[in-house]
Image 1 (cartoon, rainbow, N blue to C red):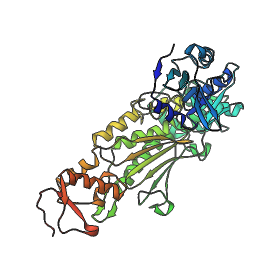
Image 2: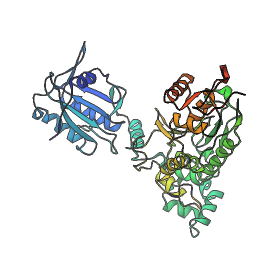
Image 3: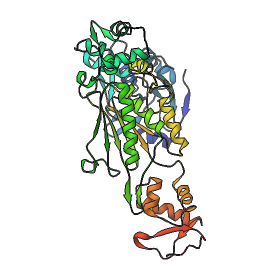
Image 4: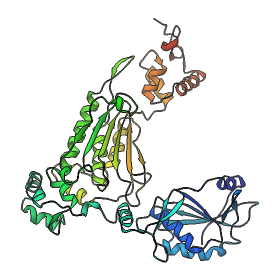
Length: 460
């Protein structure tokens, strides 16, 4: 049924030397089928992982003790198939290596769109090196939200209906988007009212002050730091707080970020300098944070502006099957009501639905800047927009010297984004060995500089 892959003995040894963790689990071939089901359920309900069946553990570490033949694993394979059909969230192969006994079954479990249960209906989630049961209704609700199967945006709020039916925001929206509808009628038909109360999405979209309805979980804070490090004493001024309905939040946050970046000048030995980022990149990444953040998390979106980068932190982990590796290709909206209705506004911030991040990445490439980096933390998604060229550090040094007489280590680190003086020095040394650059005569100490080989530039 599955491919058999022969691996080298040193590859097997390297595998056995690894430690179990959030993404890795070893099981003895004699394991009870129910425990295998728990492991796969846990991986699929978390971030995915690799399960190796046929690797036992003793006081001396892990050892290879595989199945006599692939058919001997049939019972376990049937149990895995009942948790999640192979090809959906699971792939498998048998591993074989010289000098070690038997076939080890390697199961690659991916983060699933669905909640995966064991045969007896129990649900598990991987946390560090443990398979934790999801038993309480609170934890099950949290898992459903993480999967994108339900959203906090559809929960009702204990506020008066007038907050969303008699606001400036809803009136302006209906005059431009749905000119024939009455506010209450429209909101009810759109399922933005439930049991006579506004849902979370209605407050975020149409309350004039949604922060009063959902305190500390629907604002944006912008910080500017005077260095490349995040610390309170490096804050240039008090953080800027952006509030109001989401449509206005997006445009206000983008405009304020662009203004802060444009006004930010950093002083170094060459005088004041500034950096520029594509407007489209800032717009799309901030819009994406507003659209897809988890509004059940008590925190704001944080935009941090440093000398060499901008960080946008959005509360909540990536929903469903979305990961940092497939986020540009896969689509899953945590907040479909918010996404849909923001797109109905005049000049919607999410014009090309589902293509925002791709636009952000393409805009960086057009300015020859590196792509943003997306990371997932324990309870947030962090997008880092670095002001670094796509060119290699060595190429950037040569390009700089094509229009400038010389370059110092500090200047080179600034234009390349390299933060280590010794790393930069090694790049200079490689360029010298290649006959591309040379030491500029007459320079030493802090002024030690390099010039293109044979440029004939003398010191002043």
